Image 1 (cartoon, rainbow, N blue to C red):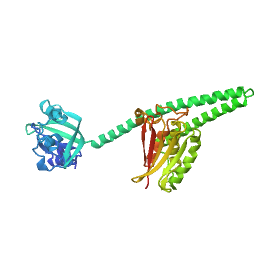
Image 2 (cartoon, one colour):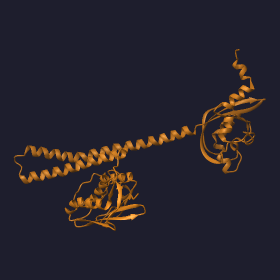
Image 3 (cartoon, helix red, strand yellow):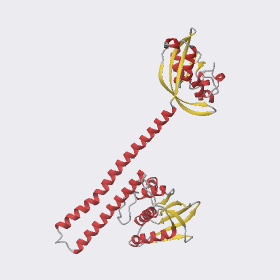
Image 4 (tube, one colour):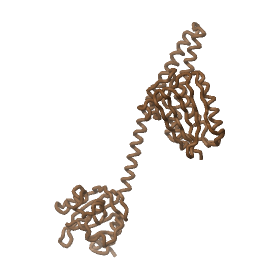
Length: 389
């Protein structure tokens, strides 16, 4: 038996089945913008019983936030003149102008919850029993818009990261160019005048080459570490150690540099043993950077104190110096890469500008944190925290 589509269209049962199984929410309003009919998808979308929809004003029926908060009827709220859905309905009635895929973004009260929704809707004028009606087809596209919003935010972050990467490459190239130029120039001089160079001059040049190459290597290592951290590929190798013994060994290592400026590093701790789980290599980087800065920015003869205290569920390690201090305007930026303070090292020491940025990132990976207190002329105190458990 051949079935005619036209015959099916004339069947009420067919139309009802079709409307109730369409995933789009469909409703029909009269010229007063009251709902006269709807399908099952519409009722499911707004979680409303039939008696709370039929004959209700559109905004009240669908839980428009303005009707809820202002306890007002649809058509009399503060937003009705700006409502794209109401404007489209009126245009369909007065001008017979259909609307195709407009977006309505608003909060709605749905099932006793306030939810922000994105609805894509279309309107079309129809005639039923010689009376003008408007059919509205609604699709909930909130998830699509949220995904797009998330994607846009990620793209913005990627743009920022890419910009920062280009800036870092530019700064790093600039910082590497100078020492490499020195190494290249001195190498040429030594090769051309090797036989005529006195031992003293040769020793002086070699010392400059060693110092310059050390800085270059340090900068490259910092760049590699920073790159690993930023890409999330830095792996911690945590072990359980006596933290006090670890600090004593680190201080002994850094005293070699402190002695050259007639400085002394002391350790102040109330206990002789603190079992702690951490990555010794990475926390050694933290200590080396903080102690190195304390030495660089302090005057010869000053003292540096490493102080260990308990703070809630953390171990606090403070590196205190009595050096030049950091100007208040510099403090918000000191943990950013290549952001150096306006004060200069006291013995023309060089800095890669990445040390404190790496320190903060390493501590982030340890679920710790770092803080700084400083006043010009009174010195600085950097305190970092590592979780005890």
